[in-house]
Amino acid sequence: MITIISKIELEGTDNLKYTDVGYTTDVGVINEINEDYDSTLGKFLGENRTKLEIGEVLISAFFDGVSYVSEARTEVENTDQLNLSEIININQL
Amino acid sequence: MAAPTKGNVTNLNQTPGANNKTQNHTQDTGNNGLIIAQFTMSNTRSYTSCTYGGVAMTQLYQLNRGGLSQRMAFYYLENPPTGNNQLRVNFNGSQFNPISIHIRSFTDSGGIGASLRSGGSSSPHTGNLTVSQDDSLVMITSCCVNAIATQQIPTGSNKTFTTHNTNRQVATGAISANAGEIAGVLSVRATSVFGNLTLDRTEIKGLSSSVDTSGGDFFAIM
Image: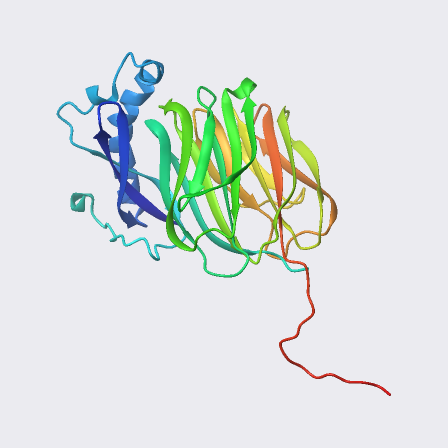
């Protein structure tokens, strides 16, 4: 399988927006992206799920000073028609 | 009969962070297309609708697995638009828990056949499905607190599957071998390393055989 890399940004004040920005087959790149996600946005979501659902905390609180986060947890069998470039180094993001 | 032809697959396991989740997926070109989508997420929200390429998909089932605090659903669309289109699933509020999504395309499909769902039961969890016609493919999916070990179609034949984490463990995407199954009662099984797990199974029908008028010789014996 090929892994799609998504860019996650704030949309409005309380929504996440996902945009596919590239793909990779490099497990090292996938792990690096997801470890960064897990220690940042993933951690914030894990600590605030209930408060986010009832509106006590807004997701915009996380994005104060953060423009975007990447995640690599979408898998496809081929990239035909997806118009995405291969990412071989996390610095390309 | 002929088995449906398996097409493109997309799997994702992300946190929507909105009242919907979208994902691009490429539907294969061919006659008698079918697209299906399996979903699992926290039961704090419900699925309200699903579209592919802007066309409404049909909900086969939506189940609240209260013991697992999860909600599982299956949507499908016959003759969907081909090429790269967006699948969008909508919720009745913003979902800040991860969702498991499995999207699979088919061509040469006769649509959805039999479908049965079973709630949490101890491992091994075995269930039957009465397959309506020869060569149908069968898909199964399971949810469990602990790791899911196998998805067997038929029982005894392990099939590959994707593992997702929605704060519960989800096995999705397991499907019959390409040749399909024989019509009649089919036993399928799911196993976990420990604890109860669910077992939902659905038949994907192939096409009924028809007279070949594309060529060949005709003999009349007098």
